[in-house]
Structures are given as C-alpha cells and as structure tokens.
Length: 222
Image (tube, rainbow, N blue to C red; front, side, top):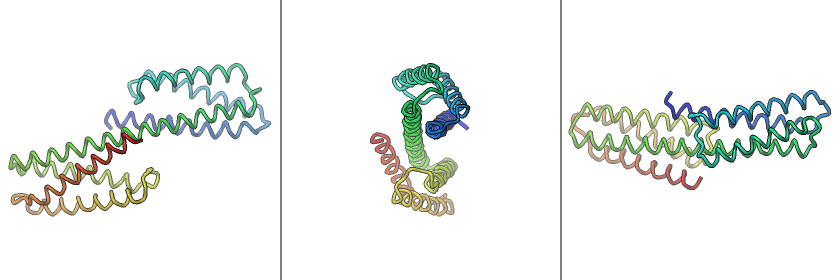
C-alpha cells in the first residue's frame, strides 16, 4: 500500500469513528443512565484527542487552514466535555453530535477528492505511456502500458460496482461499460501486438483522457 492509500484509509477511519460517536452521543442525550453518558463523553473526548494528534501527522490529508479549524473544534469539545460532563443538556449532546457528523462528512469529501485526483493522474499517465510506446514502436513497452492500463480499469470497475460509492447510477453504469470496453480492446490488441491497430490505441487513449477530464471536473465542483 503506498503513502496515499495509507492516508486515505486513515482519513476514512477517522470519519467512520466520528459518525459512530455522533450516533452514540445522540442516543446518550435522551438517556437517564449517567454511567452511559459518562462513558460516551469520555470515548468521544479520547477520539478528539487522537484527532488532534493526527492533525500533526504526515498521514493527514487536510489543508493547513482546515487543520487549524479542527484544532479549535477539538479544544471546544474538550472544554465543553470537561466543564459540563454528565450535567450536559440534550442540546449540548446534540451540539457535540452535530460537530462529529459535519466533520465526518468533510473528511469523506476530502477522501473522494483525493481519490478522484489520483485516478485522474493515473489515467493520464497510462494514456501517455501508451502513446509513447506506440511512437517508439516498442512491443515490450506497449504490452507493459496496456497491462498497467487494464489493471487501472479493473480497479475503476471495482470502485464503480461498490454500492457504497457515491456515484449516480448512470455514471456507475457508464464506468462499468467503459471498463469492459477497455478490457475487450486490450485483449484484442494483445493478440496482434506486432501489428498494432492504431484506431484501437487511439480509442483507449481518448477514453482515458475523457474520464480523466471528468474526474478533474468532479473534483473542482465537489
């Protein structure tokens, strides 16, 4: 797993934990069980202490301005929790739950944007490698470029088929169809690698470029 993969996984885990504790805080807000309230507040506070530590880590994907704002929120959560404890009102619990939910959504948006940026770059690189291999008239380079491009599209298809992926159904369907198209054309090219079909190569390159442009547009509008 490369550094970016580790960063994305780390951020996703933080987002899921925040959402989980938001639900726990919401449940505790209507409970008469002071022990449960105390435990929920304590666990939420520990999570925010961990988040505060992670903001200084190289694994963190966030821009500095967002990190600074999260540090302020962490201090706010800490002050409210330590000063009020189980005497918090329902509104106080709801406030902490809403903070968790909003930050969780923000972290997941960062993950989506970084995945889009990484995939867009990978598509561009594969398109360039295919073009260079053809210009160099190098069969070995072309086989390698086609294989790398195929692996990338298999990965994209896997993401598109994931029901948890926040993609419109039409986009999901189109990506799956494109992945199948690239797979079939790659196999077709591989059967006659010494007599390259330029039309097929151009088609695959253009597909990469178009989807890369779409991902970059998505990232800017997110």
